[in-house]
Length: 159
Image 1: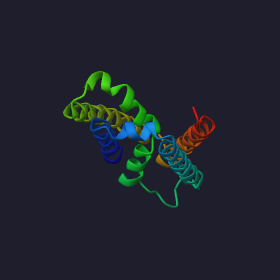
Image 2: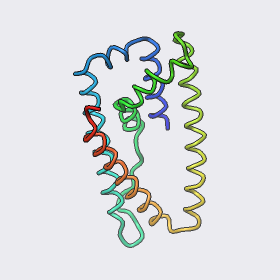
Image 3: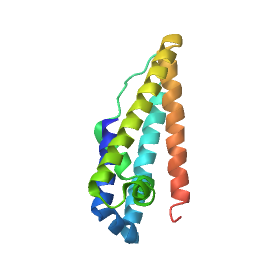
């Protein structure tokens, strides 16, 4: 949550300062960012799939949390987040840099509440089911989704 929040704040700050419009206007930079995002998304998806498939006899050989750095990088290389902040956010933020920061903070707060609700639901599921199996399903499903999103992003790379 912290890494994603920091990524959102960076996107909002860059758009508010006008730096992001330069990236979008430069096709080579935007494509490099998109490519880095696709590769990183694929990496995280495969990593989750492998973790989900390591399920053996009700336990995992190793559980590893997603780092702040990984979440931050995933958000920073997300071209859709950049485009969202370039196209939608200015409707609400106008031209004032501070307004972009306010909207970023609001975005992070909403994301945090949503994540807290989902985490609570996950904890309830954990109490009612075998934690290892829940983890296996979440990791495998999440990994497949990330690999699929990476595939879609690669197929639609120039759109």
